[in-house]
Length: 249
Image 1: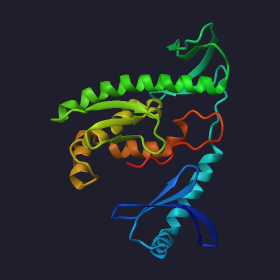
Image 2: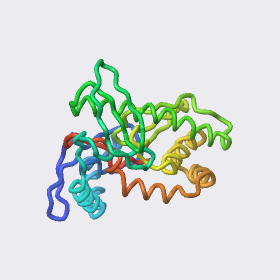
Image 3: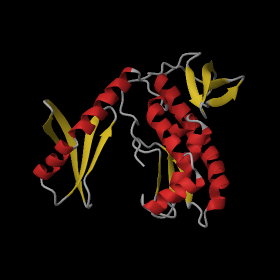
Image 4: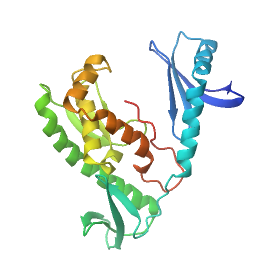
């Protein structure tokens, strides 16, 4: 439900969702939209009083997202354009080929796509599929590496489209990851893998949870700061569309 509120002289629209929960959450989602998730028992006035209390934070975050959009990169899928893989920059080389099959390789420090056409949407979808395949391979290897710290194992590891999170852990220990993280350096991927694996032990963000995260991956805070600063670079955009910026936990 879309509502509006006046914050420091600015009229701001916000998206309100009520759910069965105990706490009220404010979240700024790309490209600067205020999302409010509230318990059913809270009135609109109570919710808006809370937003007013957080007005400085809300407006600062939205302004920060506006600045980020000025630097947002739109991909043209032209030869020589830079794409990321494990934190490394690779110039794109598109090779036209017959048939319907697309081949992706990293060769001579180039990202090579052998594809039957030049349509941006098709190239984007094909490249996302490759990132997902790479993600399943790499994240599987990293989860195996860190498995020595856990007595339980993931029921499943899957790399998929996730707009709002870098990763998540279900109640039955399925670990889900955003394909975009394969663009990040391996230590950033490790921080996300460890975070979600720790949720197999603690289904919350309690003191015990964070203690386990930092015991296994002491550089977690540095990785989180890196993600906040570089999240816009971890995507493939061919037009202005909703995409990931603030990933939550």
